[in-house]
Length: 243
Image (cartoon, rainbow, N blue to C red; front, side):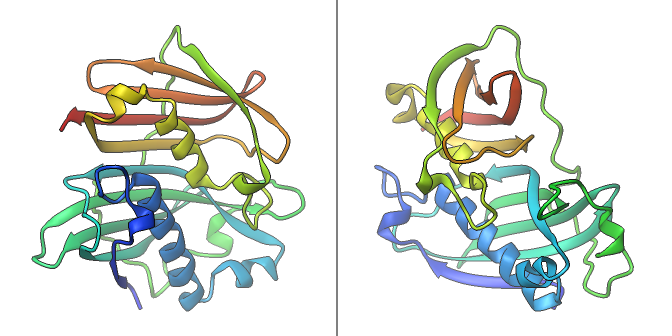
């Protein structure tokens, strides 16, 4: 199955105060679809764990045209595009029932050892000659490497809690987006539509660690960096427009 498809109805607990699908809820769907598709192709979580390795999301680029509303039915598709250097590439799209494109996503994944946490060569496990590879670009370029702006401001500090953890024993990737959105000024957050998300996941964070959240705001971009001491854990760039 080259393309994995899921149709779902937006639940109330997936929505924000405007009754629209939250970006973080959207990210949960991306994560689960990647898991299910990879499992159906023989390189899912269970398959890799048996080999002492696991998938981790490294970079993601999301473009939103419109967010679906509570009770709206949408269709999402995902496919993997093979490998490029150390990255496994996976794209997604979301459409409404009329076929209008709501979101486009490209993502870059790494394989690491479960014990060593060291990078593995992806072509040893998933080469470009795999029959399920689908070389269709929903976004023409891979998710980019971000550079943090100068003179960022310390917005808040937080401890990584039990509820942040996932089955890989580190902070789940969706949490970093939640932290970034929560760092946006509340008055501004009520007025904007997030139309683009770029995230670089730079290192793991674990329960009990202290994370500092640094921010920088421009006319149409909000940049967030999560750091553990001097180590960058994640960089998040949010593009936005007024509602």
